[in-house]
Amino acid sequence: MEFVKRVGFIGLGLMGSGMSMNLLKAGFPLTVWNRTRSKMKPLLDAGAEGAGSPREVAERSDVVIDIVTDSPDVEEVLLGPEGVIHGAKPGTIVIDMSTISPAVTRRIAAELAKKDIRMLDAPVSGGAIGARNRTLSIMVGGDAETFQECLPIFQAMGKTITHVGGHGMGQTVKLCNQILVGLNMLAVAEALMFASKAGVDLEKAYAAVSGGAAGSWQLTNNGARLLKGDLEPGFKVKDYLKDLRLIMETAAEIKMPLVGTSVVHQMFRSLDAEGLREKGTQAVIRAVEKLAEAKLLK
Ligand code: NAP
Figure (cartoon, rainbow, N blue to C red):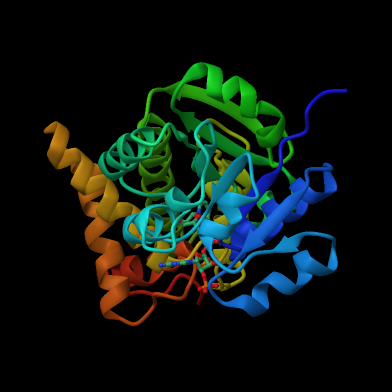
């Protein structure tokens, strides 16, 4: 019989809760930990074991996955006083699925390697719905053999799974994804505002351009939300601001001018100033409306 890996899971937020549930459904023996312990309950009810710390998760696992917020949070759960590094045996694989800095990722991978712990960076795209429905895109950096070994684990959580290079490259491709997301979102908001201000029927304009060469995921999904005046989050402004910071830091490191993304960054900063951090990224329409001195929906 094939050896089934014992999986540990750290971070049961919007993303981690759905992803860990899918690992359980796929038959992986699962140990979970979350800082706010109450969020562990649905997983424990479904058959997962609970641990008292990231260290304890590592003691009971062959592969440890984490998906928390930002670079310092990943450092804390992996390298902190109660971190994975203190419980993992040599040969353990750590998979960080958060969106964090590629440079910090490489630093963490080097620290873990000192104890013969292998690491993959495997950020995701597809939101909480993708996490729940097992349709995530997963971009993986790290050693190719370790990637192959973890493929069944990735397949239990996502649909499009791509090994893109060495340590940090998964994170770099995720930032590339976020450049596309932001410029697309701004294009959708600006184009719809243009149609509205010029007096075109918005529903008709939307239908006419959706199926052509300008069609996109952002237009289909967030464009439709804008037509209903719905600013509730699929993906929050505050989370995208974090990603924009990571994009700009990385761009500075590699001396890459990002002209379009800089405009997107300033537009999203204005949303922050307006107190719209908890809204969805389609709220960029508020910044476009201010510049146009007009409302999208009459
Ligand atoms: P979330 O719902 O806010 O959950 C964050 C999780 O991280 C929670 O379990 C939180 O614990 C834990 N956490 C944060 N800081 C921690 C620390 N210092 N120590 C221990 N635990 C900590 O966020 P999410 O939407 O699941 O996002 C998680 C990651 O996935 C982020 O890097 C995000 O950029 C990325 N991502 C999100 C989406 C999306 O659409 N939401 C899509 C793709 C990628 P508590 O419960 O105790 O707060």
